[in-house]
Amino acid sequence: MHGVERPLRSRRRARGVLWMLLPVAVTAGLFWYGRAHTPDYTSSLFGRRFDDANLLKAQLGTALLGLALVQLLLGLWMYGRLPGVRAAPRPVRTGHRVVGVVAFLLSLPIAYHCINAYGVQVTDSRIALHSFAGCFLYGAFITKVIVVRHRRLPGWALPTAGGALIVLIALLWYSAALWRLNGYAVPGL
Image 1 (cartoon, rainbow, N blue to C red):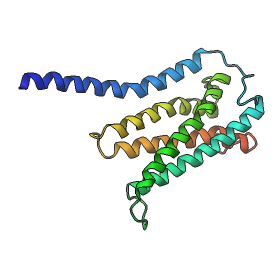
Image 2: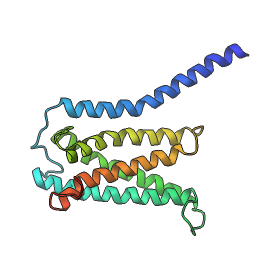
Image 3: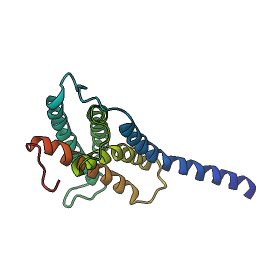
Image 4: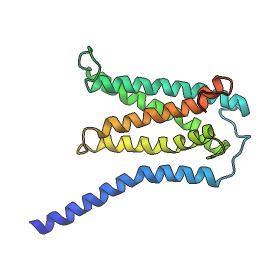
């Protein structure tokens, strides 16, 4: 019996390592693509170009941040972490998933325009922060999906993965949407 358990255990371990490498590969792939391709500053987003595209991305990014905060509140409610609020009814879980899917889909056109129009740049602190946070966002998203699907992970894994997503979305909003909506200036950068 022990001879059968060892190969099974080692296959599980190998699959676990592969699952852990997937978010790293996505993050590294986005970074590599963003650095390797030539930015096309004339690319459009839903027919808008240049500053009009940046304004649209700032508005979409603000909506994305709002959805991330709704996700946070729904997640806290689902896991009984909101003081003075009764247990979440079943539809809250569905709402949490729907808001997550909508947020992910909303992020795609923003990211597509960013990486194709500007690529990954490290010319100044604001742009570097935005570029790195953008690459890490999709690795963090994949990490959260993996954590949700694998029930054997420690209890801190899910809130850490979800928290990382919210922090990255907030950093992206701060370094681009707020910058654009605030007259091309943000405190601290």
